[in-house]
Image 1 (tube, rainbow, N blue to C red):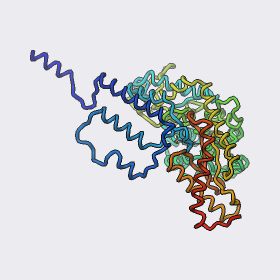
Image 2: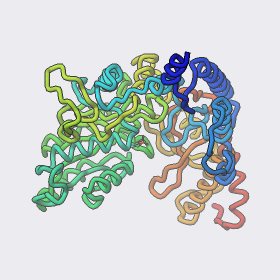
Image 3: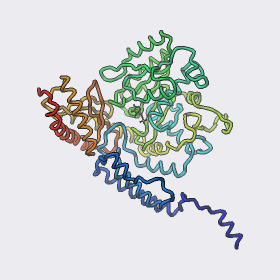
Image 4: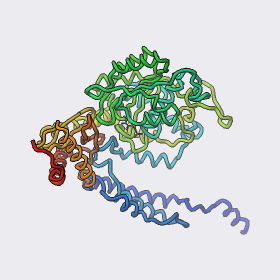
Length: 510
Ligand SMILES: *Cc1c(COP(=O)(O)O)cnc(C)c1O
């Protein structure tokens, strides 16, 4: 008897994080019910609660680390309530701020399943099926955009990291010295030079800073009237730097700029890179997936010629955060930039060798980000994505038309699914410096108030010194009715702010 009891005890361990299968099932059902209810009621909620940081900070309770444990069912209820009551909902039909998409519900299931199995997608042996699914996801992403499916690639946390990976592959391939061993100090010649338009996202400053290349190495090429890189200026800059003994190594084209959706002339950038033997990287974090459209602009399709492309499944593939992806034309360029073979990893050099993702990027242990992307790609298919992306663009264009037809609103740019505009009181004439400065202040305050109230959510862009409102539709819940409602909401707040600000501002009326 005693022996048997001891044996049983030695096989059972109490651990405070254990959960019985029955408990897991019951809690899971309750949570899923709560999420389903939340999704059903989303359009009726404000886009955000409009609370101060102090209020939000106080909500979870300010006590110290719990000394002892709590009931997991109560915790899940509480966490769900905290998040549902105090979040900004990028999945709300009237959320059109920044480039943050509505998340596909199947992606939430993907993340749950990935966390339950918990494969470590750093090494094949720790994640055989997950690694193969990630490889297939990378090939499908390439196929979706018409990029060669023989490319290498991997999932990363987002657009910034995806661009970092491309930049580091470029530096390794084109530096001309062993930059991985000798570092930047090993440069035997003039400084490395990377070229990008002035509209490029700030990932470029970060990568140049973080990896020692330095932001002074960056050449910011001016843009034309459509905010696209001026290729004549690019050619001049490359020539001047080469003549001065510097080392041009990389040209970055943007496929959908973060502020207006402008697309650089990518085919011409590709040609310039071939002429000068430079690495051609495309930042397609926002617009890359629009290459799936049958009527995609030819300039965008130039991304197919790039040495590397960064895209962001958590933008136009509607994956829940986080999911970025880098594609590199020659998979060996990733190995060259990132691979080490520490003695504690067994290296297989056979033809059908397993892929170990730790060798293809900066991470070692890796989560299974690819699953949510893979599931959504299968649920929607190429046609599903083409129609969702096309409809987002059509809605942004429709907003542009509503704005143009609305007295008091001045339409500005329209590219991909971004529309910019501003509120101009009908009795004011832009062009006069005093009026222009007032319009900037007026629209800044208008945006603050719009964002606080939560009726709808847009963000801003600054173009030629003008503060503009900016709507970006990457949201499969947004409808024509939401676009039609936006001008009225904005004019109403604009009139209110104008009435408050103008008497004190003493702007000349025209
Ligand atoms: C969003 C974006 C980035 C950064 O991507 P994250 O996912 O936010 O890291 C970079 N470039 C462009 C053009 C973007 O739109």
